[in-house]
Structures are given as structure tokens and as C-alpha cells.
Length: 334
Image 1 (cartoon, rainbow, N blue to C red):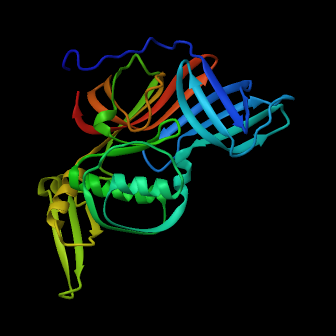
Image 2 (image 1 turned 90 degrees about the vertical axis):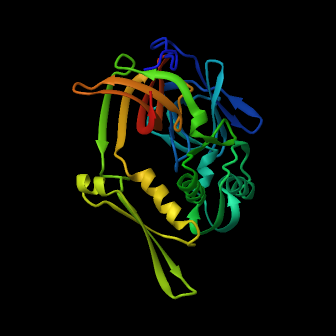
């Protein structure tokens, strides 16, 4: 490991000050919280989720759709809206709030022509009255993208996948305290090193069972010739090692299709590496899409690897802050 590249800044399980505010019209409440507060994010396809329980007293009054804010120490962490309330015989109300990404579950019919993924994000946000913050320029112009009865999440992910295939650059969409934000994962690396001493438990696995392919087949139905054109890319060595694992996709155009097949092979022709860390020291900077360095001894092997956070759950309880991480290996070696 190169000295000075990563710094682990955790001070252990230090106490934190957590404040939740619920805003109903012109009235802001700071309710009494009982039990755990959990904040969860995933890298794609799901909104940020905040769950907590409030004590029902004679003062508090809030409804579905009201704004919810989470503040940890001096930092604004979450801005969302109440989507669910549950009550039992006790004097508590269980609350589930989601951030702005929840509205990307809406479905629509869209056709995009000669647009970048970043432009598609802005277009959808404007159409559904969502606020945008920093939206990175994704560069790659998508010739055509036709979406029928798909969620906005799926439309955006299709555009980001097309961009990833052609540029090998991954982008992450998330909500930054009420503003849609799109960033290159390279700009989301954190100066955090996770070791055996910073997590209570972990699970590590490597696999070729999911999202691993050593042969790519793309096909294009040429209306001018009436023929189906087939384009292939494969790795004979890994086919011998793993057996044939084929990915098939229909192409809308035959322009650059051979390059796309090779790009997909480069992307998928590898083992996936997944690591789950449980009850790690909490750090509010960590969210899905961030990159962290990991150095763990797993008995017969040592992992010194850069990982992307696929899912993150922060738990705040009794002035303590812990987090569970689901990590995915990337081609960055620490």
C-alpha cells in the first residue's frame, strides 16, 4: 500500500448529536425520538430512506407529505418527505420518509434523441418538478433512447448504462439534501480505510454467477437488407476456465456496434467481488456510490482493494453511530 494515499479518520464509536425536524406548513417540530434512527441509501434504483419512531404527545401534528430533515452534529444529512406512518397500542409513531428520488418511481413514456445522460436527468427532473444540484456532464451523446411505460429510475439507468458501456465511466445519481446530484464515481472517493479493527463482522465473496460474461453477442436487424447482423466478442481463455457465459443484447443501430461488444466484454469479463461490513464505525460522509479502501485479512488471503459502496445503512442509537456497508470490488488496487 502506498504511504499517505489513504487516511482512516475514525475516532471510534464516538457520540453524535442527532436531530430530526418535521415541517408541517409553517410549524416545525423537533419530536422526541425513541429507539433507532436508520438512514439507508443504494447506488441505483432506490431513494434514500429514513426510518424512526417519535413519541406521540399533545403537541406534535404531522401528515404524509410533510418535509423531514435529519441533522447529525453540525451537518444537514437528509431532506425528504413522510410517506408512511404506523401506530400501535403504544404511544409511538413509526415514520418512513424518502428523499426526492422517491418520485423517480413514477412511470412515463419518453423518447430521447441525441441527448447525454446528464441532459436526460435534467429533462426528467424539469418535467416532474424536481430540484437539481450538481449534474456532471456525462459527455457521451446517446443517439436514440425509447422508453415505454418505464420508471424514471429505469430511464436514467438505461442512459447511464449506455454511457458506461461506451466511455467506461460510471456515474451515480443521488439526492443531496433536496437536490438531485449526478457525479462521476471517481469524484466520490473518500479518505477512509476499513480494516479488521473498524468493523464488528464481515462477509466476503467472489463470484462468476452474476454479471459475469465471457462472450458478448449483439445483433442488429437491418431493415435495408432484411438480414440480422451478428457481432461477437469473446475471451477464449476464460471460456475454458469458467465455461461459456453469454450476454445477448439487441442493438438499435449498427454504428459502432463492434466497439460496443468489445466494451461490454471488458466490463463483464471478470469475477465480481462483494464485501459486507457490519457495525462499522459510523462516518456520515459514507453513502451509496462512494469509494472506500479496504484492507482485511481473510485467513488464507488478504484483501487490499478499492470498493464501491452498493448499499449503506447508518444506525443512530443512544448517541452512537454505526453503519452497515455492502461493497462491490472495482478495478482499483489500493
